[in-house]
Length: 337
Ligand SMILES: N[C@@H](CCC(=O)N[C@@H](CS)C(=O)NCC(=O)O)C(=O)O
Image (cartoon, rainbow, N blue to C red):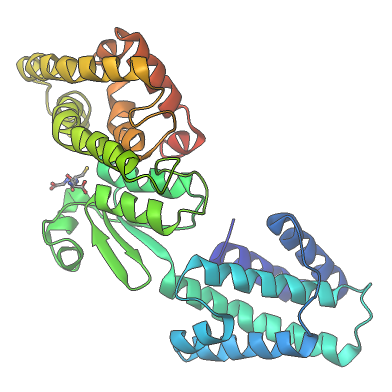
């Protein structure tokens, strides 16, 4: 867990517990276990207190640039990590075992409390937001990427049945009136596959690598790009029609058109024959490692596994193994919850 939720919890502990010494001990334990390893209190104490209060002030004044100047870097999760580390150092200083005088303890405590509330505000101003619907395959493509990357985000629900996506303010996020739309600080995006590519590059160092293993090799990128194009133009139009006919129509109280299902299944079989040949040679579509190419397929496959169309995957041993592998990933399971 990272960011606003953690801070809210800690702030609550601080506000509620009378015995501050044990509260700090408990907080530092939480942070130490979260960060794994702590460079205990390396920053000079006064410097740290000063920095935290400066950051707090800057955020209170909505002056994000000034906040960045104090803690370095831009509006990104690197900044969040730096703040986390700074908090950890405060906690270490406040541990009863540390030889810290009462005044320093008190001023550190105040700096922490004001920075904690400011930090909550910061994360609400700069965090990742996905505007979409939890059942939409395109929204799930983005959620899946964020889960693979272990990033905190907020899913802002867009009510499709009320046509919220066809009106303002959503249309100013995506003029084509489709979910998802996405925000990361100042950056606003739409089109799920463009969003996943942004996340995979921007947060390359976090969580699972979703790009080719050799990130310097342009031809490996090109192969991954072929896979993403094939998914978008050959696989998804057919698979999505099958999901519409057999899953979403039922949800809206409509009936499946079997003629359409038969026609689309024949097309899907042709695409899956190509996949079977590819997966006979490689474990994943873009090579030996899981990439965005594979990930983009997951949401619609998950829906089709609950329909008779599942047989098309089962009939092809390499496709079937690949489907099991990619749909059983922990992140794939998370989007079903
Ligand atoms: N190419 C777009 C497709 C988005 C899309 O079709 N979203 C669907 C939900 S999965 C949607 O908004 N449907 C409602 C509508 O078209 O009115 C993307 O990948 O983001």
